Length: 306
Ligand code: MN
Image (cartoon, rainbow, N blue to C red; front, side, top):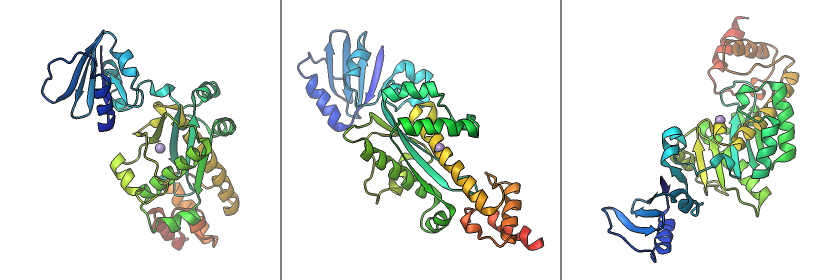
């Protein structure tokens, strides 16, 4: 069995020191240290890669829990989880996700939920899964349970504020700031407990994400991982997505009541028609919709003809 870890330079030197009493063997090119202990050969590379080979490789590697662990076998079956710590789905994870970025009407809603090992079992019983597969009534029922069970935080940006903020930030940057904000809030709520990891449902590259939030305080960057379809790697992201959708649904209801008609989600032609109706009713579209979408021009054209 072969297990590969990615270590920071600090961790790498710590490991080198740890294994320095073990018999050193010949050092292949690029290696910082190599040690042989019963059942395992450990090779540390200057690149930060540490390879454990032998019968007891996984057991030995598991000691170094703070560094992401990936076994060769996992690499072949779950290629995309290559950089996540081993047994990721079983760890205590703080997850975040947002909803509303593709919808003309309604808010941008971002949620973070902390799911510890004991929460995991409860959430599984509740039927927490990908929010896109769940109907609105199920979302509402499960979300209420999640927020009773798990530490969480939501930031819900209604169109009125969204339209002001989008003058200053692009949408991905606004999302990044929201994710960082809700993650920071939940970390505060659960302190002194620390999650084993933080997983963000990925929407930009990690480099771009951190560039977008570089001026934010606190800046949450320790143990942060990114995955597209994050909900399939840990229930914390699935739970965050359900809570975000729940809050977004509530706001859609409020805005619909205010508008006097049901506001549809999405950004299709139905949306243009409804937006035109709002304009002709003399309502301020900026209270209901994300005005930078091209739906605004189309709605104005339709409204002008009516
Ligand atoms: Mn997402």
